[in-house]
Length: 137
Image (cartoon, rainbow, N blue to C red; front, side, top):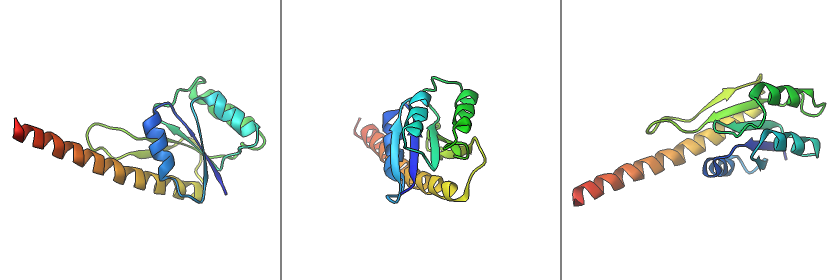
């Protein structure tokens, strides 16, 4: 099973995104750039690293990418940033920080599709609830 490593501090978003990744992948979740590098060094070599837009990068993004590329096992690992939130029902999107690999791109696209569908349903439920509360006022 390929490994996907999610890095982020917004627990709800990161775990919701992890639940959207196909079951054919093993998902690791960490809260810092150093933890991501340590996981990779200790054997959890990812096929894809996904940074949440709010990722608490204890390293700068260039430092993180440089250190990841310097590791023999992680030199070719693609890195994407998921922009999960926007104003209103804005669609989440993927920003590739390294050259993407087709398989990793497919996994990221599927995870975003599932995440976006769930986020849209939540947004529509909130709008309906607000409307109902207004109607009752």
